[in-house]
Length: 519
Image (cartoon, rainbow, N blue to C red; front, side, top):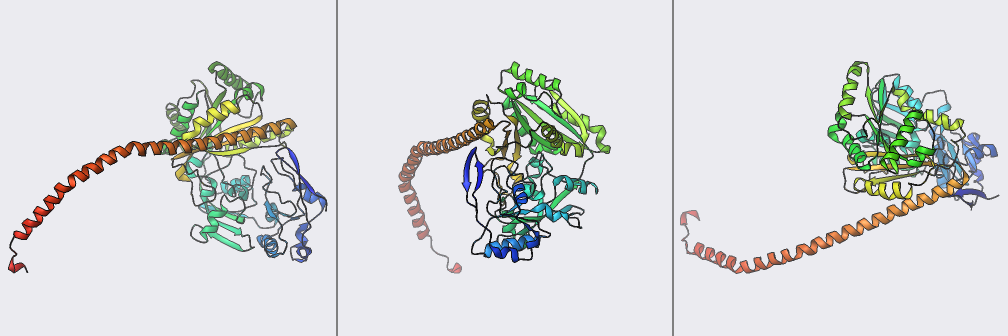
């Protein structure tokens, strides 16, 4: 067999390819397995466009039991092979690839005659192959909707639940994985298990955010809420990161979140991106972008911070939304006059990235390498990260893309799940997404180097702060030692007097005649 060539961080490397066991093609699922080059080529790359590796075969399962049969065969084979589920191939580092193995074409599960989206009063059962946009439309027919959404809806349920599912609603409801009641999972031994917080809970918590390493999710039961009709969509501009951070944390605090926005997210716009990037977007007009670019120039900041928030409402609450919005905005410290609003339907808001996708596709800029980097940053370090990474390491670059900043409430994450909040002992943290694209070939190598520099910076800072904390703790103990010594000496000096007092008390007790009646 010829070797498979894949690209990792801009360099070619060879990956050995071996044949699949012949017995595989004697199974009952053999008619659903494709090995032709056209089929395998379609599953040899992903959205990241960084890694390329062809599988030996593609399984188009008719039912979840077909997936179980494949995994069971591989697990029991003397020569087990990689098996990887693939939804829309939206991984960015080859996670959905299976070099020398079998790709499971998950969308095939939804091509049968029966719907795999079933809506109930307070939950929806959705096949893991279903697109979130289709789940949205199906639940809206009943006036309901899931509580948390990723920014992009044309990815599968199984995709986001295998990661975390982060969106602007997560500060209130947690990530998507925190809103799952039940799963159907095919385990690594080919067993089909229904699990929940109460039943086979170890598998349930492991599979959520588990990157597919603990099993293949085939169905999820997701919590629903009453869906709003419309959304007041607002963006606010800041030139001061401290004020931006203060307001993000204010808006997700318990007091503010109960009466404020339903969606809170943030973006960082580097100066060069503002001046040399697109002159308009589906949200901002050319005049808006020119004003924001002018703000960056006037403030002397290397970045402008955009707060993106949304307030949901229905026909019955339409008359109050403006007053409610004005009341919340009055508490914030954005640059005066830099408030941009839109009024859209709920679907238009949730599916907003679709407009940006179409713009990029028409310009030939969608199917380009995406060396994305997502990080969890403790609340206490977000300003340091902004100074060291955003302003220093990235401040002079001009890649296409966006830098996102989601504020999170730690308590809304379940640390029993594989995807969990940073263990920093803090009530808030941030998810930062460096979602940048390599438009030309040279950009990829540059962005990969920058990503490594960012990771090295974070690692160095983590070690420095750990050492500083240890040193501070040692100094505190050292400073406390003289007081402890003095206290010990005082106790020692006081001990004879206490002993005398105890002896006197004992002598006195012995001198009291006992009462015969009490014996």
